Length: 279
Ligand code: HQG
Image (cartoon, rainbow, N blue to C red; front, top):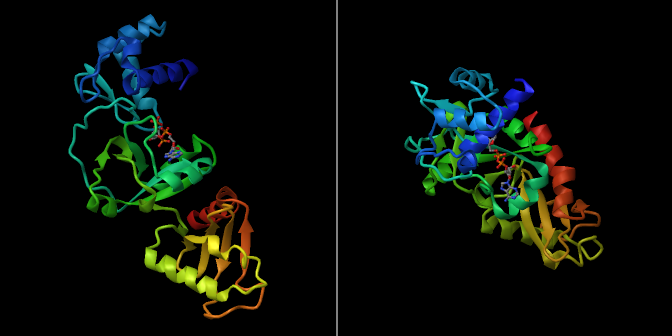
């Protein structure tokens, strides 16, 4: 795509997704605009184009972004809206797992407050990891979050499929986010059991002996006994391998690795583990 074509396509997407009024364009409730209005607006922006140009542009994208009706009277953006539009199709059943591609720099915030739709009407999800990596890379070093769609549907979420396997849904709280290969979704009982075992194993000589009262379990590494604890006061994080001896261990056991913050743990450990996981 030439530079001019890129500029034209960005301008049209901007009108169709975010600010139709800037081009003096009206969208119907489903997000459709009259192509004539788009062409008139392009002309005013010194980017005179024909219907054929628009169709060619639409076909030249790396993925589907616009839909043009059969008689080429109307055009709409398939996804990415910040303005609120109605979906034309009913909610559908997605594949069991969908992926959200984000950037590592957003992860701490996402783990705290969940997946937000930010400026968009919906959270955007992909059917395959490659596309999620592409979406995430737009923001920085990519990171994948998995979604168990059945669990969400059971909890009242709707999923809308747009073109090219982009799925739209509402914001998703942390409890439903799968962050491979670490497991953040731990029930209260397991949390209690693991903390209790840790307390049994830490001796007076262990580096955590003074902090043990502040520790809370955050995540587990897959099915293993490696746990991530956070000190609620200092925000330091500890990756600890429990021994399950049920009694005070000889220092330095249980083996413990310290990270100065959750962010440090994300950057130094989680990101590395996830790279290995999806390779
Ligand atoms: C992140 C493109 C901090 C979220 C793509 C994302 C897609 C949070 C960014 C479509 C957060 C928003 C949409 C939280 C979410 N704290 N950051 N609590 N919750 N985020 O661009 O999904 O190519 O609005 O992870 O391909 O990246 O233009 O959304 O990184 O399908 O056709 O906030 O846009 O389509 O970024 O992309 P965006 P998106 P086109």
